[in-house]
Image 1 (spheres, one colour):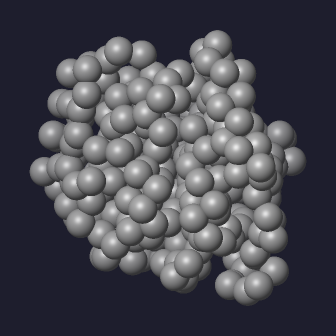
Image 2: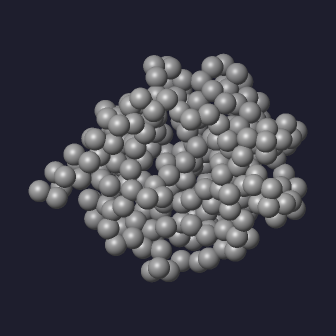
Length: 259
């Protein structure tokens, strides 16, 4: 079974689209665990309403808002997950109907998968948030015009899906294309490295640290590009005041390993 660990914070409109996209999956053998880093009651009320008719089992974990503590709430989600395979997703991302099926196809013992994203601009994001419900067919019907007008930054990875293969394997750790909004690993591997480093508070590089420690644990990294793309809604840049310190911690961990 797969567990989707869905990180969210105070954007119920985006969360609604994300959950609606998860309801339309071709592969529905999964659960959703919402890892909520302190959202207001508006998010709780939305989740309770959606749960009434959603086809996928859903659990809502919440912690008090004390700043960006995504690592802590994700570790709680890892602990309660029933699935033996974990997909990490952010609620500002909308998924394609075959998203779970594609991740399942790439799942392989001894590997983690880092997926990619398609960036949506501010105007398209605003339009989608005003839709009454998510409709992938409606979105896909205008895909080429979205690309030509600059509303999305990629076209072909949404049109062409590639299968598994050794060409996806990374030979060593690289920072490039690590996106915590779309990655996956086996639960036992996440537990073996004690999950995310809760000492990394504030936005930035907690995902790179997680991936590096998995690779140090002899887990190989596989690219999920051209298969598992998510649609990333436009939003203002997070407070990056902790990013430099978090990056320093990751570099220190890498250096310690090298020595």
